[in-house]
Amino acid sequence: MLVTAAMVSGLSMSIPHAGAAAGPARGLIFGCRLVSIDRGDEITLRFRLRTDEPGGAWRVRIFHEGERIVSKVRRTRPTGDLKVRRVVPDLPGRDDVIGRARHVATGAVCEVASRV
Image 1 (cartoon, rainbow, N blue to C red):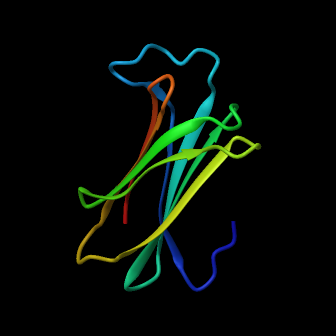
Image 2 (spheres, helix red, strand yellow; image 1 turned 45 degrees about the vertical axis):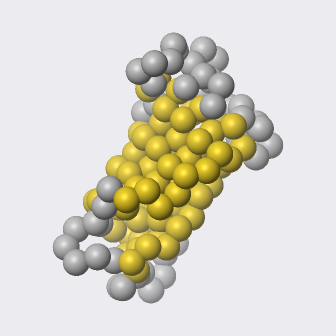
Image 3 (cartoon, rainbow, N blue to C red; image 1 turned 120 degrees about the horizontal axis):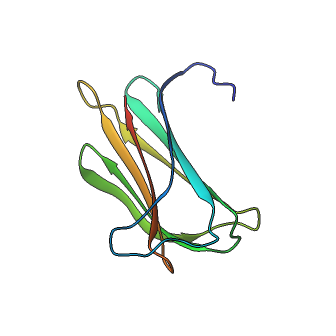
């Protein structure tokens, strides 16, 4: 990935785990990442989920400094990808960001965190 006129401040990747109330996600392979790009007075957040299940429904939530900024159910594309992009203000000090996706049918969770 080529980033110009900006600095990539955080990149996190996650190994999936099953949700506490859900059983294991049999046959479902997935992973997610969160990229935070510092653009001076704002931060561009890119959450991406990759799975082997095209059309699967996932509840995606993104938190910036503990405040939920995204909460929606999205379906993966035919390629198995799901992407969410948001721009948030760059607050003083370090910014903590958490991205979480929960598979609607199985309860499987993929979570990543980034500090910018």
